[in-house]
Image 1 (spheres, helix red, strand yellow):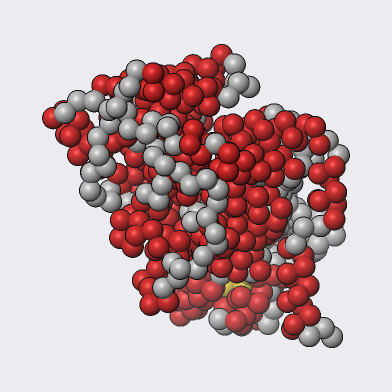
Image 2 (tube, helix red, strand yellow):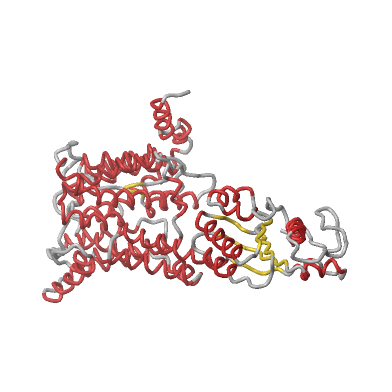
Length: 586
């Protein structure tokens, strides 16, 4: 027997990169290097923009893209995933920066990294499949709205107003612009966004984001557009790793934000990896390894002043479309961005903030899949409601709260739909003997034996209706419950059934059961329902024909009816006078 330490080490080893995954980087190096270069060009303005939007500065976005992007590429669970700062994470970080400052954000990233590693060790990655599509669509649409609103101050060329709620900040920025218009900033932001959106339709493979930002920077410098504020000085190189931000006294207050960041990192990274799988043939990510890789990335990024990172859907999609086949592409993207940090920091520092705002506004617009939203909203009313609630909660409240609200509402609506499928129908025993007009067939009715068939789940959300309907049975001395179509039974359903049988017994009505599945006997037996169903005859029955024979025998033994005419008893392998087919007898 292996020791707990050995099992723990085996679990950790299962999360480390396999030789085959690393060896795959040598298969198509040219394609991967080209894909990595393309992704780096796309990622540069996004990393700068998200760093600025988070409140920690453009340098934090670059540090995140380099450090987290490289580590997640090596240790993650997807060969094609590209990680770094994202708009969704920025949305979560803004209120954390406002409340706890830059040091609080770095602490939150570190704690979130530890939580992600714990989730990987606990094999939590598989639960991503239980997130409904309307929640994901509403979440994505809400994030796009928040990213766009966050860019309003920089796009209008006004100072960042105070406030932690994006709607409030955007409104105050508009008020400030009305008082002192800055048309240079508006023009740059609009031009960059327009070039990106039109260019993406015209030539999707061309990195119009970097071209637009470069053009905006040149125009701002040549025309001396002082109103278009630049990013500002960037350090030449990554900062020295430091733990100066650690504050043990703040751990208690930062746990809740860290849970939110970890939940978002897990959700967005696994969603992005799933998107990459869907765009390729033969690629399948390991969700637990992906959580482990993101955990390591978020442990390391704060040491270099980086913000929490996740898998980035847009950059991952670019990586796949440009022909990436291994982790080498994502590693190349991180290495090129590192070169930019060391060699081109002075040039990057001249980029106008309005240009980066235009990049992110265009990114937000491209995140919205109108066709997908329309299809989801038209699917069912429940799907449309979940989508709208999740999107509104994302904008008005918090991303994690939004997902929780979406999951709770989707779960409640799903339970309601499942409960609505449960039915209790009276079954005519005479119809079971169709075509047989013997006296024995009609004796079934004379003996006052009635049958009810339960269809669907017998569980907490639906079972109380059975209690009401069964308790109101007025005709019949024996009730046969046909349960072969019961899909599931929980403790609540079993207790409600027991209560209904007890009430019928008190009225002198005997209840028998047929077709109980083996897996459902344990639940019925645990609450005492099975004992009641067996009380009259000592058994439950495989099919209805056996239950009918037992009901007749019980009635005769109780001397409640005169002897029935002699005719063959129902049999499972023959066709007696009272024919009960295999289909109808269960």
